[in-house]
Image (cartoon, rainbow, N blue to C red; front, side, top):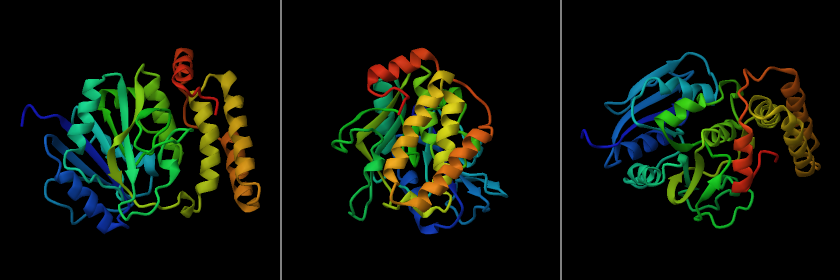
Length: 290
């Protein structure tokens, strides 16, 4: 056991999907070739009825997704850290050791996101492929944002990023984490040959989706970009959303409410990425302008 890779695993839940949570935890416990330290973080829920050997963190109030994940980080140890949503699972018992092998074979990889597949066989949303030119979902590539539901990082890399963006509550924290991985001279990697399962549920099911989507887009720029790029990035996304939701005035009104809040409210700190990072992202195919 001493020679096995060690992985701290954080699973965040509100306790509203017990069957999904049980499925995800079972998929973790089935992993081979790794030593796991698993914590379930209850966001406004005191975790109970879990398999033996899994620790818990109870948050009396809902702190949001990024802060909830961060709350679990200090409760686990390991050379790697893996975040798995409570409605996600990993079907292969060698998923983690296979993902770790990719990172160890190429130490420039600082974060790995697998391909996401709905296990029921319905069509998988294209948004799960975190690149502009989606192409073949099985094709691996550098990316500049991540689907946050199943992400693996070396623990040292995660710690150096400063963690998930606590103030965001929901939406776009995966973009900030990816950018901060790039800012360490590492790459964020979409591994199309590795699979995580997740139901194809629309994010618009959340009542706060449009508002937080816009607010956090502005905050993302204010927290992370050189000041000269902030209006360029926000302006490009404003144009995209106007075109996307021009025929949905209610959605657009909610979005602009969040947009205004993003400019008026503090994003909770600032740590700009370096200009060399902007250049590396440009050379890799996507500067932080859109």
